[in-house]
Length: 117
Image (tube, rainbow, N blue to C red; front, side, top):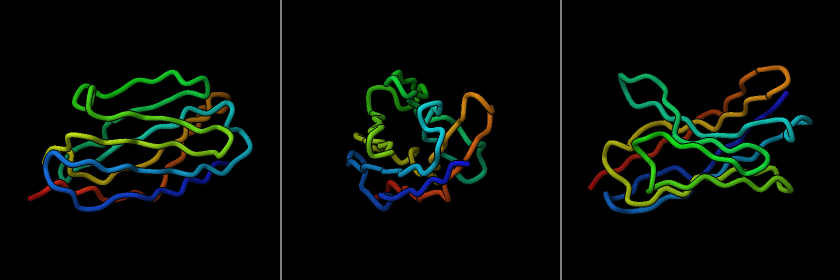
């Protein structure tokens, strides 16, 4: 069982930056890929970025070069630094934990990010 608690969403102007944080609670975090997904109104949920316990990362094409995911295993945290934000980044952002051994997904409650002038 993994519980995820997100923070850091809000309203930002185009070109601005935001940092999302997610704290993970659970006993299998060493075998867990942590990541961020987002869902905009009327669209499917999509991968933003994810990071494994060794620090290996991958990103959605639309955020490469602008967003950076990082993980602090000691403090059970995963972060998403978002720079050069665009209006199309507006969405609810969800923290995700994928437990490799059980192949189970866990989700946070979501945090709203709105990019608007």
